[in-house]
Length: 208
Ligand code: SF4
Image (cartoon, rainbow, N blue to C red; front, side, top):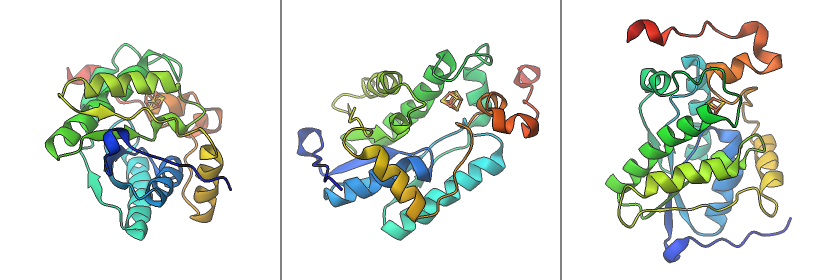
């Protein structure tokens, strides 16, 4: 398989990698390690619903992080704030306005974590999925980085070269748990194979 030559902006040697799940980040982590770049994983994904699914995706990623000896930072399961932020966007399709808000929330926290923990560069695996709009992810990352002087969001295209093939290969080799929907309860509602067992959508409006 063709080798990917990677280098971080400003010849940095470490990067904060926001990860949503093991299947989307396994190939990226392997690529970074091969390039002698030290990733630290940040798991901040309050969009994932229900909590059982959230824990499952997180545990799978921790399993891989331990195996690869990659530091893993676990952040809050801030579900109520996520529902507050996407209020009014419940019926948006995937790649629509709800996803912009969702990316903003996750990458804002990633930028804050990078700023507070000495990372000059951060990035995310979110753009690797063919179901995602890469420009939408990059816009959220760049906007989040602009809050902190000197912080860079690395807009590397993880789909380029053999990125997608490697992603699938690592997922298969590691026998990762593979989810059927993006993450939020609305994406589960809108995924045909999940429709019959979608959990009740929380009535966040009743809490506010
Ligand atoms: S579909 Fe995915 S990216 Fe969009 S709001 Fe739901 S969890 Fe977030």
